[in-house]
Image 1 (cartoon, rainbow, N blue to C red):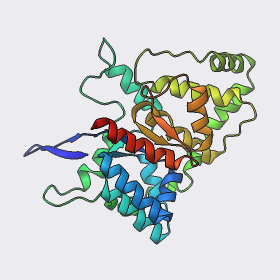
Image 2 (cartoon, one colour; image 1 turned 180 degrees about the vertical axis):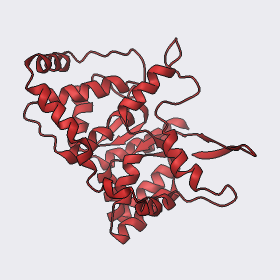
Image 3 (cartoon, rainbow, N blue to C red; image 1 turned 30 degrees about the vertical axis):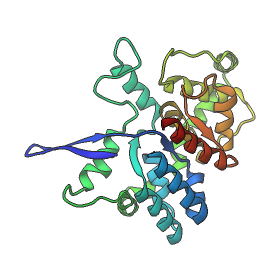
Length: 283
């Protein structure tokens, strides 16, 4: 959750406290929850019983704000306002940079900051839009975001990543670069010896795409990479599409609890059971 730590004449201090389990939902799961009231009620009850924190990235909020169907929006608001929440950076390169700058010499912890915490997102969507004397509903972010004059450029959000597709195409057509990616992909060696493995997940994801020459990455599929890297490095449970579940489960050489448990669209019941079992393990 986000809470006011200090309210003084000099301003407001905000701190983010995330209880476990931490859960990150891909867009397909948000859509399922918005369309199926039975599933939605079960998810809210299960997550609430676990004391879970639902993590939101800028990508998540933008995708939710772009939904037009009124009934879906109301259902999403219901989920958002029923459960605890936190804000996470979706940009793996930015998170990796923060990790490298702030990690203590012994490793495994960071000076004064959680690198995945999106301070800019907290400032824009929480600090600047809250009245400390009034109750805050997280869902109030979405209509304000939808009205934002900048939202138009996100309607085709995938096109923002077309430059990445060009980089992949260039790497596949450069024999030296392509061979290096294939060697790294086959060896699957980690550069880090402790959590978080953000840098390794990101590098192996890129090598995975480059080495699989027949894999097409359409512009709207790049957002799935952003739903994968940081959440899998930092959170307990993450829902992903089939391709990136396959990558985490069969290509990346680590398993929970070193990385998140991941669940595909066919594993929703397994996802719910994992949350329930996490709750039981805390008793």
